[in-house]
Length: 310
Figure 1 (cartoon, rainbow, N blue to C red):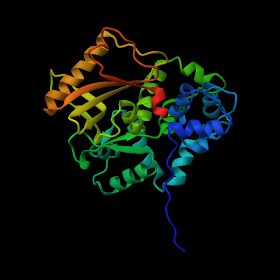
Figure 2 (cartoon, rainbow, N blue to C red; figure 1 turned 135 degrees about the vertical axis):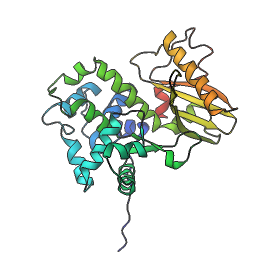
Figure 3 (cartoon, rainbow, N blue to C red; figure 1 turned 90 degrees about the horizontal axis):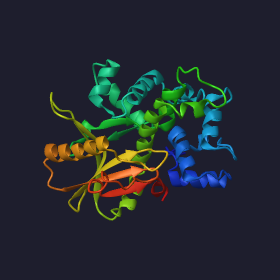
Figure 4 (cartoon, rainbow, N blue to C red; figure 1 turned 180 degrees about the horizontal axis):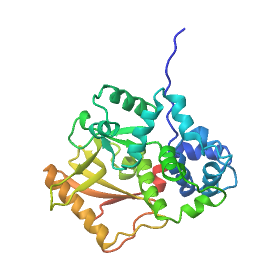
């Protein structure tokens, strides 16, 4: 008898919405994306989302109460999948602490390993299981890949549950008014966007154009400004989209400081890569970007949350 491995991918946002509707959980897209940012598109978790409760109430129940299924899931999950779970968890924790990602060499250093053979296996196992994802930097080869944590629940657990005394009804509502929540929501939303690049390309009207997504970062010497692009889309029609991903509870507003950062990012990218292509900045947000003097002339396109559900 032949056996075959079947890799089960998490639901996309569209599939998550359809699955919740099937279960009569009638939440809007903003509520669904909040759930997705906390637990991803894992059917095993989504089937515990309760009818008639908001995203905040469900996260509260599932993550911060004694009977919550995600209260102690983290360690059990890794140990059920990997023989050397502690090493896998060390890598995951390192990536959780470095949202911009780490190279294989940087991970090797964190583990204190002298040889890279076993590291390759650990990274492959985590990638194959969907916990982490490698991103190819612009104009670089596979050896230069930057690894990022891609499992939403692992990020959420390590940020808010691991080692925390906070528990009980109302915990998540209190946390969601903190600076830690704002930091997490930005990284979590970015991770969701990186899983929906196909939908972003459709929203930009470039799905029919050959393109290659990648990341890019420039670490300068003293006295110079660095820059990092977590998603750029290099297109065959001689254009490059620099995508900025921002989670906001309302319409996002670009201020003077952020406008200067965006301009610097595009300028440094063009200068350091020597690209001859047209560079266009795209804003990807929950509810859109306010039309003000800083947006005009700086942002060429924008994508909103609802377009990630297409």
